Image 1 (cartoon, rainbow, N blue to C red):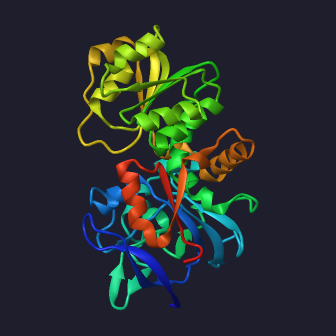
Image 2: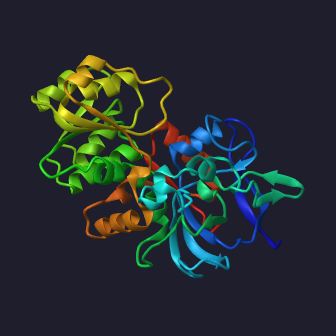
Image 3: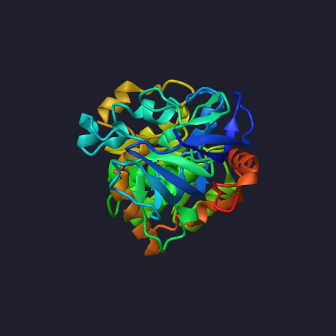
Length: 369
């Protein structure tokens, strides 16, 4: 099978640096799409895979918030054509019961299509000489000059929008905004508390404001992030370093909050949110936790509270990503304020800045590499 030489950021060991290497990439199969990458966002999930918490074995090519231009399509692809601008999102089969219900984030094959490092049939598309490189991370492995995606996980986007900005809509921004709009269905006049003010939390904040929430509380331990959240639309902020979360929240909404959204995965934070909810309130959870969740069952049941796990913002990417772009074009969803761009050669610096909190959402510029 025909192969092309590309440059990819390869991780070769647990916790290792991303090394730019020349590798070979297969031509697209019948349902696949070859994309010339323009840019790729970095996300905490890339770091989770780098650190072997979950994800493909090493060596591997990560990256899952890609944007680029279609270079070639497989013989069975009708959704896009060469020259189309696309955002790459998570992989899903499109055929299982959940996919057919409009719940692709809960696809029966979600883990395999996004984390196992190869196609569903076990084949690999990346190699270096005789060495096999694990790819297909989120059905894209977009830390590379070219990416092999599938027809399902490419989303055609308008050419007039800056393509370098759009990659994060495929995962992190979609997750935060979709949690508010699709999963929790935050409505005008409601009150919501959002804990963890990284890229996902701030995307949720922007979506809550666009949805008409009138009380939006940002919760974090980083004062600079909290200050920034006020600029983006938070009505209140709480630093949990020096305060009791539930007490502070109930000072703001004495009867309780309609909604809460947690990105931290921390027991004490989630319980503080639950204690501050109005009866029958809903708390959405995303992220990777290090400990099991423990709650006060009597309190939880007595108030009829709900906890909702959320994957990828419960979104149908072909619809939701375009909706977010329209909101952005109308000035109602300024997610570009979260982004800082880095050249491909500085990918390790970008990730370090993300982990230190210096940069909210790094985007790696690949187009001119």
